[in-house]
Length: 179
Image 1: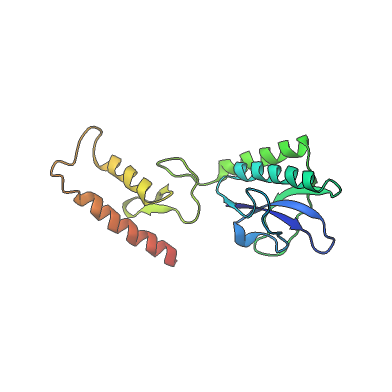
Image 2: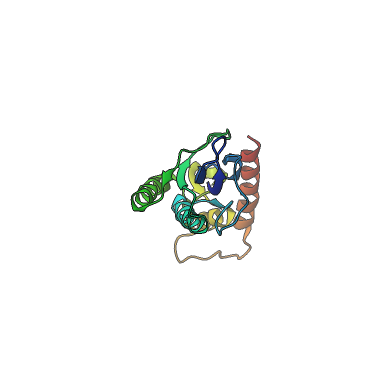
């Protein structure tokens, strides 16, 4: 999870658009009020966060041409750690996009739909952590495909397997959250 904020850095007052890893709770405390689309939003895809940050930095620079607007990415770990910042330009944009592509490759993705998994993954009790899903809907779709060979239908139509899966997945998801 990545969050994009505009920051007025402490103690020198530098202006930096930050792409913080870890979500809204892991941004630096010098965040300014949201002014541009995409600010203070959490992104599961770092590539989207970089694109938003570049648009925000460009808009901020257009509104404040006398200020040095920098851009950077990093992880605070929940601490106050101002990012150094880089001047916005083609080279910086390219570097940020390369960084985001690398991070995207490392992001856990749903084994059913391929979307990024944010938060805790949904798993199936019978399969352990080998298969991870973005939510119960994808887990159920995957599970149903494993239970019925392609082209077959639930002959008695009672849906008992689906209900049993639903309750088992709810129990498993709750037990993972309690850990």
